[in-house]
Length: 195
Image (cartoon, rainbow, N blue to C red; front, side, top):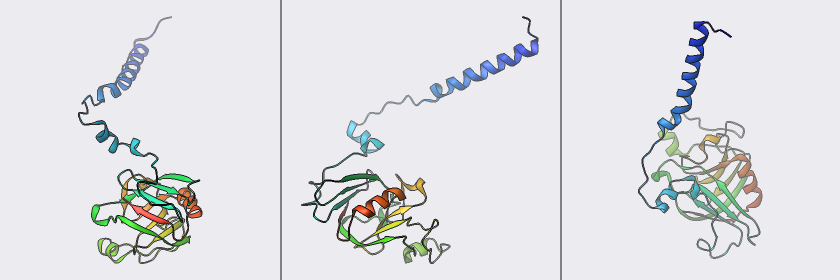
């Protein structure tokens, strides 16, 4: 079978382009070697998202217990008799000055929360609305657990890109399906520790 020069040229161009495309990932790979310890590497990696035991953090799980680990961006939940353990990915505060650590508890549960920005949020973002009713535009998602600290909540989010990132103004965000589950499991009085 004979080929015209135009057909041969088109095939050569196609084969060259395909070979270059397949080789690009190998050429672009970073060949630098990590020289730190294994624990340093794991701390900055998604593999640090792991199950934890409640005992180093709580004297008991009476009323249930929620541990929020800001470094691994994970929320751990144990019910009062420890028959249920849940681990959820979270969003965490954008910066250290927005972060609060320590012990508190769930003081209120709201299905379909509304939202008002705090005075500090309005100062930083004057264009934000003064009020957002429950619904798909609400930054608190479908459910919210109000904590004993003013303005701090564990809540859902409709913006799923925020989970796993430093993206909040102080609250702990969960996927809506996860906050719905945690909302059903936890009670007013559930102890909370943010580390």
